[in-house]
Length: 60
Image 1 (cartoon, one colour):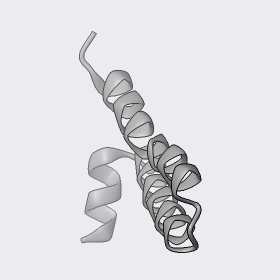
Image 2: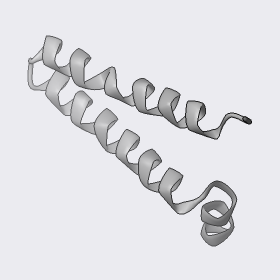
Image 3: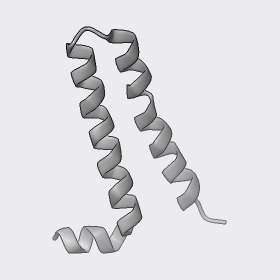
């Protein structure tokens, strides 16, 4: 199942999705520790990376 997922979207995209998940976790931990503005700043990286992934996958 995991091999099919990696094969379908590509290994680079899997790594980028793992990066997005880790960014969300770091943002949540930062927010819980009371650094709210920093957490918002870090949390905005995730949709930026996902948007970049969409841009790269669009048909040309």
